[in-house]
Length: 276
Ligand SMILES: [Zn+2]
Image (tube, rainbow, N blue to C red; front, side, top):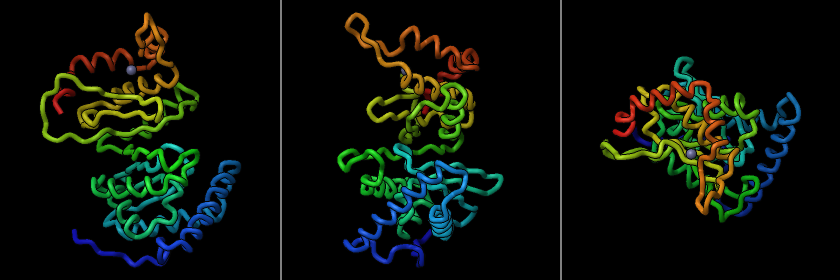
């Protein structure tokens, strides 16, 4: 598809000069304030409503199909997350408020990422997030943000994470989640790390091998559940060695409702999981 630049009346005319940088900063401050007020009441402040619908219109301008609903957030970890609802031909997108002032290049990248998981669009968005680091609460320019891909082709990690967090953890887990890198050539591996949890970044990463049709949702959920438990259980030192999975960890892990089912499924599908 050729690139058609879309003239966008809502986008800042120039976001590069210092004057409009100041304008962008004060716009961001207004939004942060509106997001704070939105958290405290059921009424969504008008500034927020306007910013969201403006961004929706600008993203939609680049979409060939489907509708998009934007929710702006002040998240610390997840900058972008997408829920695709193919039946309703709808995309629900949660975006950090840094995207409120996105220019047409960026709204186009958002559209391509949302609709097609486009890798080039992901790269462009990743750079934008890095450049706008200072808008993220508690972040400095020195700490680059991980770009997160929660919507897979078959499983939505955000949905799974939210559900588990509510059900098992009283919504106490504060972590980001993403699919890992895509594979190159399909091959049979000797081993695979289905999930990892990076303590410093509070980031759960799930192997792309699990984003396949034959992998049931409960199995992905089990892997996510395991990684979430790593935030609850610190790594213990035992006889001078680090113990990642203590007895307490394992007994908590067994609380997963489909624990036996998940383990049985893993045993019978190991070969298929390793071939990715
Ligand atoms: Zn583990």
